[in-house]
Length: 296
Length: 298
View 1 (spheres, each protein chain N blue to C red):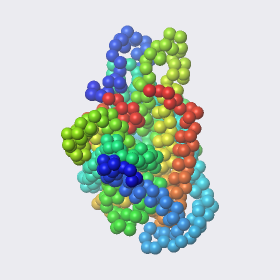
View 2 (cartoon, each protein chain N blue to C red):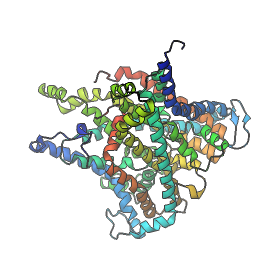
View 3 (spheres, rainbow over the protein chains, first blue to last red):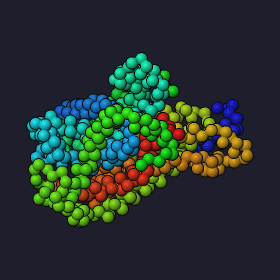
């Protein structure tokens, strides 16, 4: 420290001054709550008044609560299916947006449109769209002889309905994939064409490997979004039927704001964070085996 | 629809589409199917909003209203204090934009335009925190302690807990602006320094004007995020008079049954400003996405 020049000290000071809002935000809105989750998790606290120390009781109750395990199962189920499906959908969107037709800007706007709609509004609309009697979805499927599906009332379909709803917001990720595809030099494809490669082969051997960095980004973001899923379940199903859509976030919300069990809810938040961190780190570590870092 | 500025890479390649009719035909079928799937929910929302009560219950559903019940839109705004909630939502969005622009510009400047020991090291936590801050300003991982903090500060049931976090940076926006600022040559700042300009002058007179497109992206995304926020208002706003449109729509659900045409009419009104903003600033949305992924298009 001592051998910094005056100028270096000045820039250190100015630099820290500039990023100081973030340092404060990081401490107050991230580091503090992450640690406080574990500290509060060991107390009985109603949201008001004083907290009483209960040690590991909340964690014991949590692990003994079948609803907690149901919430973990529902959340992992959602994430494990929504993320890969999201990648496939985003690739389809990117391919669509990459088509060389004159009116492509119109198609792009139409495909992107639901992504700008708020999840709460789309969820409200899905209640109606997926209504077993009057809904458009069942009417359409009925034209192909598919029997009536009670999307939001049948525990086998409720999570699938929410996974499908999430695909409406695939526009931004589709655009990221599109940008990644556009970054691939056309000469690579030309060379493959000369060798007689089919469209599928070109996609599988050229496009797919070269957009793996974008896929990695999508998986990391998708896991975070998946583990924090809340709004569709709160609006469409309120966790039902038979708790099939009680996700961890809804479980935390209900415990804190319905049953005033803030300590218990904080303990759950801490565990949600650990799951998220663990998954994100393992995906990141696995990336050296499947992500192509040679591009650019 | 799309402006040419900065988007050359995303535009369809000009040239011989005319000569490849069969290929283009396949493309169009594929595009039509995709567009229909993605348009149908919004279309259904719009059509349902304008159906009469009688037509709402008919099966098979009418794909196009026989009678246009424009009155539904008026009725929807009477079902809940629409104007009040519109104002609240706008208030929330405007202050979020102000906070996001000020803080993230300053923070990104510190992470890109000034060289100081430890800069890269301190940037790691920014990247690492992205996955927690995916839902902003309120997320299920941090919401319990943060809510408790705001309870102790007596700020629950106000907009402060929703707006304040925006004044302390958001990792997505920091990353986006930093990527943008790193592309501005260092020589510009150095030359100004040699001419005796101080850091404040360099920031406001040289870098700020050059960063305007990226700042516009941040402003737009921050405002839209606030408009779309549900969880934040849900836990922090308790008085009916403070509600935003997002939780105001719940008014349509508390009755014995949901009147879907009115709910959809209200939803259309909530989405309409977003659609207007989207169509006016489409290129900013696209830039925001592509800049944020570390693939700047300029």
